[in-house]
Image (cartoon, rainbow, N blue to C red):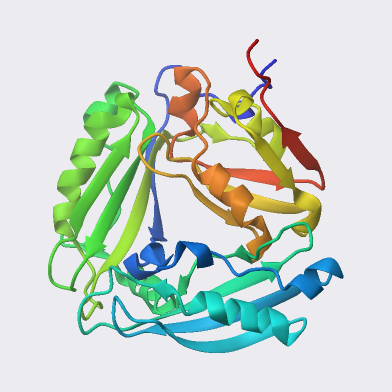
Length: 333
């Protein structure tokens, strides 16, 4: 039986008070970080050194990777490592096959990446590449302005009268400080599409005046709600969330959180089916959680339409206890 999804549903009633629009700004990973790939499929991940694997020895290696051409191997610097040099050697062999095929001619990028070796696997867990320049890009987003003089979007009168609430996700690319951003995608549930259209027009007046140039990708989340009302996710456990994922019973799902630093918390911004969910660990990244986070990024909920209206674009706080999940779908007879 499907577990009840912990959500607060949209309150229905006459509009008695005011209305508000909340705005959340998130930096998207740089294109270079997203297109990082191994040119040799056989080296997609570092191999577990055999002696260390047989002896149950754990390891961790953090690299800095500097790319100066799309088809060239990176300059490799070991920033940190735990365990013997065999782990470092294995990661170096793998890293020499890495490429950033989307890197423009004449460009350079410095990425940092973590690798963790756990004896229950024959290869390393690999974290995503982190673009060092994203720290500065995140700070630049703080100077976002609107030509009207106020970045605060007003709740449309027609939406207040019709009691329309909802969230809208807007993906943008800023190329300089003087031009409006390129609107890459606007996503919403059907009931909020008119709100989405108004936001897309609003974006024509947005600027990033402190930005000297170069692409900065960002996602803005707009939440329209009436004062005194709330809708979205309640805190939940991993199993409660997984119990409502579409097709979960037909998938082979295997996770052992006892090797992921459990218990820990995850924050998930639900964007399906239009985009992948944004998922991250609370309190820092652990590469051993990579497979679980990837599964959650692609997870689409199978719940009634009014629940999807309530949770789309919202962030769920998910607690991950220490447990082993091993679900194999039954074969049809």
